[in-house]
Image 1 (cartoon, one colour):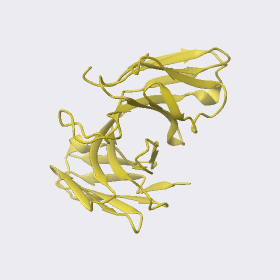
Image 2 (cartoon, helix red, strand yellow):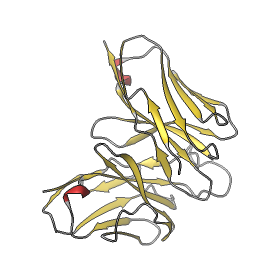
Image 3 (cartoon, rainbow over the protein chains, first blue to last red):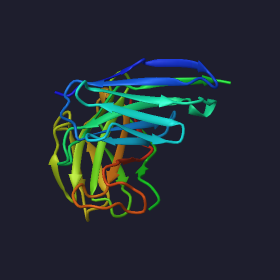
Image 4 (cartoon, rainbow over the protein chains, first blue to last red):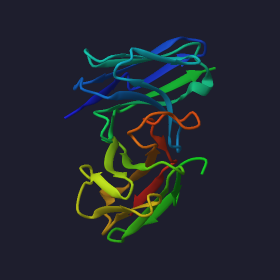
Length: 113
Length: 123
């Protein structure tokens, strides 16, 4: 059974810092990995999706990397802003037959002005 | 529609009552997913639809939970004889067909788009 772990569970940083969120998964036979953002009381917003054949994806100040063989992904946030405060979730999909996403527990990020 | 729509946004019910939660996916999205987010449990998968059929029901926690989808669009998640442990946020997501090439309007086919959820409280 796939297990996804996110470290740290919570993180508080001052504005402007660069930071890294970590995600690890136990079964490397994944189809893709997705990073989401969740604001309090809201649904999930997809940030980046990395296919299993890719090593990284970038969107603005966000960069996600994937090392499938070691079962790890990182989300790098550059020049953090208070608006980045949210819970960040990573999720893996096992195959392309429509199987569900398996989620990590999330990292709750607070960026202080 | 512009996004995945779920209703109601909040539902308070008494233990033992039945509840129905509704999900209206993005137009053209044939894949639909239900997830549950509980305190201390994280986000867990419940059921997946491709069109009107549900090839993966492996996440439904008990036979009190059922879901259907009609017309390849709206889906309803029904919880019978609700229990306090059913209290959670129920999230619905949709995606483009998982086979076939190309993207549509910038929406990559593998990405799941989530609704805001229904917060269910069982007293």
